[in-house]
Amino acid sequence: MKEKVVSAFRPGSTTEGEEAFALMKKLFPICRSITGNGVRETLKIIKEKIPVEVHEVPSGTQVFDWTVPKEWNIKDAFVKDQNGNKIVDFKKLNLHVLNYSVPIKKTVSLKELKEHLHTMPEHPEWVPYLTSYYKENWGFCISYNEFEKLREGNYEVFIDSKLENGSLTYGELYIKGQVEDEILFSSYTCHPSMCDDNLTGVVVLVMLAKKLLESKHKYSYRFLFIPETIGAITWLSKNEDKVKNITAGVIAMNLGNKGNPTYKKSRQGNALIDKAVEKMLVDSGSPHTIIDFTPSYGSDERQFCSPGFNLPVGALMRSPAWDFPEYHTSADNPDFVSVSSLDKSFDMYARLIFLLENNETYASLNPKCEPQLGKRGLYGAIGARKSGYFNEIALLWVLNMCDGEHPLLDIAIHSKLDFEQIKNAADALVEKGLLKKA
Ligand code: ZN
Image 1 (cartoon, rainbow, N blue to C red):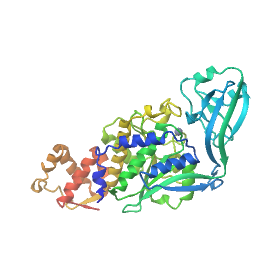
Image 2 (cartoon, rainbow, N blue to C red; image 1 turned 180 degrees about the vertical axis):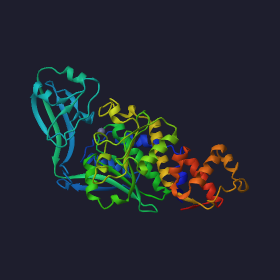
Image 3 (cartoon, rainbow, N blue to C red; image 1 turned 90 degrees about the vertical axis):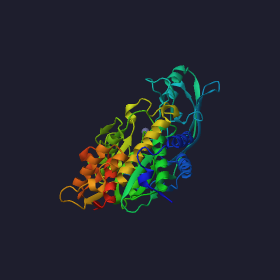
Image 4 (tube, rainbow, N blue to C red; image 1 turned 60 degrees about the horizontal axis):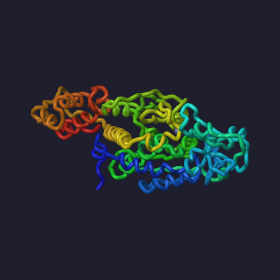
């Protein structure tokens, strides 16, 4: 028997952080990229939790103004000094290789080696994460401290990678609800061994999908696990017929750091998703930041919000990646994120689902003057359930604004009362025959 989404996603009712963290640690060592076996292995592990469907799109496929690139795979890579010591080893940390490096095997001078080394002097212990997807190149990323130790001499560089025709891999899970209107949740699976950006987004969505599969819900839900940018462009180009059903959408990213929630609005700016996330954050009582849509930074909301689609899709994160120095470095590891942040992030997404699922529109059955609440036991009865005073206020708001035009979210925003309280009031009024669904 499936639990109703109303109870499954009631605020504060969930603790998924531990399981999400364990899944993140399992996915952490895999060397991912925008294509290749790392993505397939990641989706295979996700499949142990949810029945995600794996799609392969051949290299060379035209997707709007872009072309699906050649597939990249890597087995090993290192740099050896003249004594044969491995001074850089891909097997110890996959960030050491410039992601998408072409194969190379040669002996180089220190000068030539340095042309292919990338460091981060401002954080001398960290290894930066860099990519070269669309320009064939090779390189290594090392800490500045290691770079400083290099001495004149010859070095052996070896990258055992393959860049050849194959496909781009992504995962998709569609969970049918009572209506065709759907909520889109998307996250990106292209980053190698880093946590906050963006395994945390992936694992929170996996846990959310798992919970939805066990629940009854009104909306249909679509989950995408795609490589950033090229994956979103590919999905949109192959699914133009499906986007009309997207009622609301969110990109999940940076959900494990210790910062407070941040929401980047959709391009529309005042869509249902924008109002719902803002109200959810206000109700949660957590300090938070709301930022306007911008096409200049962020993630796949940039593709979903391109003018030809202009979908109601925002991005819900904790501290945005551009706010922390660990972003795209070896310091974004399991120590940088926490179970408690993942827990809070899951709760935030669960609250959002609770709000969207329960955002019904009602009409009062007693619209001429206020109904007499006392004779129906509505003074005090609700009060016993939760802080009475505000619930009586909530009853009055619901009775007044339920004219068949205002959904509960609008009433909650307008009255400045918690959405949950407004919903409780509506439930009580339906029970007493004073309200019906419009
Ligand atoms: Zn990133």
